[in-house]
Amino acid sequence: FSTEQRQILTGLLTWLLIGFVPNVVQLLYVRALFILNQSRFYGFQAWIQLGLTLAFNFIFIPRWGIFAIPMGTALACAVITVVFHVFVRARFEEAGKAIQHE
Image (cartoon, rainbow, N blue to C red; front, side, top):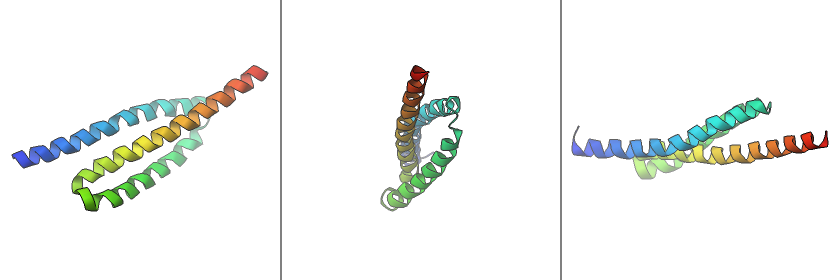
């Protein structure tokens, strides 16, 4: 590889690794959704993440070129991870209140 190609690969891999962390957190939240019998939300979230990824890529690619692809994916993944957190936390709080009332 040439120096320029190595720089491009390093930049791409950096963004892919940044996106890896929210993906791991998402996997943990998916387990929580199945525990709460809310697996339907997972399918809904997958479509939203796909739409966000496409939108971010559409916005970022003209400006940053190939680097925008992992950037858009990492950003969409981070946004969905926050959505997962809010949703799962609310469901666990509801489940906790229901158990207390029994």
